[in-house]
Structure formats: C-alpha cells, structure tokens
Length: 139
Image 1 (tube, rainbow, N blue to C red):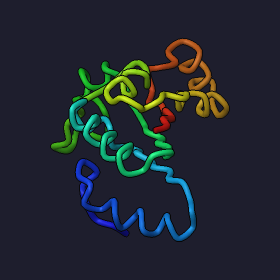
Image 2 (image 1 turned 135 degrees about the horizontal axis):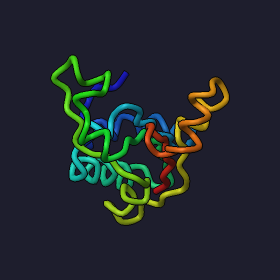
Image 3 (image 1 turned 45 degrees about the vertical axis):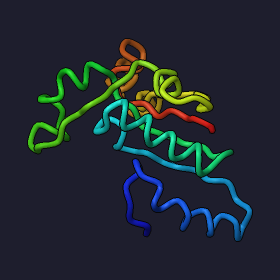
Image 4 (image 1 turned 90 degrees about the horizontal axis):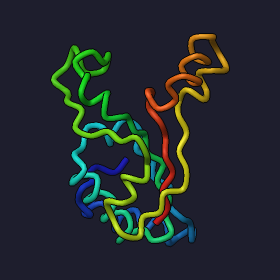
C-alpha cells in the first residue's frame, strides 16, 4: 500500500520504480472518488497521472449532475458529512479538463443491473445515465 494524495506526485516515483522492473503499463482505478472532487481537483489528478505515467489508463466511476444536486437523498451521503462536488453526463467532460487525456468509452452500471431484475432493465432503458457510470481514459 502506498499512501499519498492523488492530487500530488509525491507517490509517483515509488510506483514508477516498480513499473520499470517489469516494463509494465499502469492502470488506475478511481471508484467512488471523482464525485467527491471538484473539477479543478480532477484536472490536477489527471495532470499528475499523464505527466508521470504516459501510456497509462484510468477507469473512473462517475455520477451525473442530478446526483450532486439531490445528494441529500443519496444513501452514501445522507447520513454522513460527505459532499458530492462534481457530476457529468459524459466522460468527455472529464477528458476535456486536461490536454492529452483521451476519452475511450463509458458504460452505465445499469447495463449490468438490467440482467438481474425488471426494475434494472426498466431503469437501463428509460434512464440510462441516471445511475453511476464507469469511463475509460488513456493518456
């Protein structure tokens, strides 16, 4: 485990030294993170990644702007002091924050939910971007 802020590059050298041993590329997973960051903080994090890990990939969970607006009803924040600070309708908005970040694709969690229940199927058909989504970025 490496401790450090995703918004600073103090941890990057340690990761880079391990990657060089195996000549590997980096895959970052940001699950449950972006919604708690401002767009400026997301931009800073993307800048750290692209500067230190060229050729890397990021898979990031995203929520939509309505979830930010109505967060007091969301089960993960209504009983805590957590605050949603950002949401997008498309991963392209995240890629547009930082040069040399390429938006590859995104998928709604509804795509999986529709396999398991009628409610999930209905939600996926009628409101595909109302649930969280995962998006893939390359840099």
